[in-house]
Length: 285
Image (cartoon, rainbow, N blue to C red; front, side, top):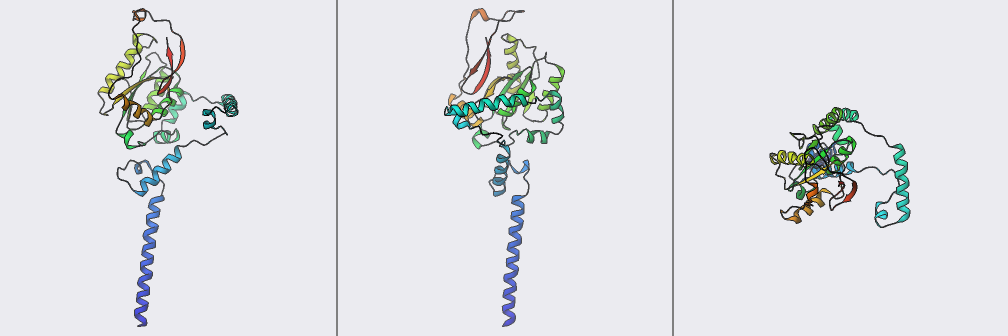
């Protein structure tokens, strides 16, 4: 009788040890460092959920001051003054990133994309199922180009970069280096010598459109941008705004005869900042 009780006790102990070992293995698997391969799984599981939470947390930038965006939006004058003061001080400490810096950064693409906080997974099923094509026409200020790309980048989208044929070779090399780190970003197959307010600027977008039509990405809409644009909406908000168009285009246009293209001439232009529904940009007249 005593022997039977000991056997039962041992069985309970072994069962408990087995359960604890299994739980330890599950926890070890769950909370081991996440890699990008853990994120794009289609099936829901606890580890993917944990890794996605870790990924979103890692994308957040640390706050370096007490500026309150919500108070600024509400019109709090003290918050506005504090933000302007911070901006003034930040400009004094600002360090420009050069073309040579980007050539060094992009030698390790994985580290570059993680450190620069490029989004590496679709943030929702709705966005994943609604890829957008972008035409980006640039000619200078490599840091501004990379900032724009980071702001609008999503892995389900496709991006065509048109670099002014007249741009310095070092600038072109830096753009190629950045582009080489992404499967869904490419440089236009034909580059134009850009002149603003001329047909060459339109042709640059057309060149990208032609390349994007050959892409295997089933994009729904194309948004054309330049290096001085910047989005004021999230990718999700842009997707939902485009869906409201129901297949129609949103294109500001005019037909002034005095601005028609004349070979060898270009139109006098002035610059002003324009805020549209999706982007803040410079316009040329």
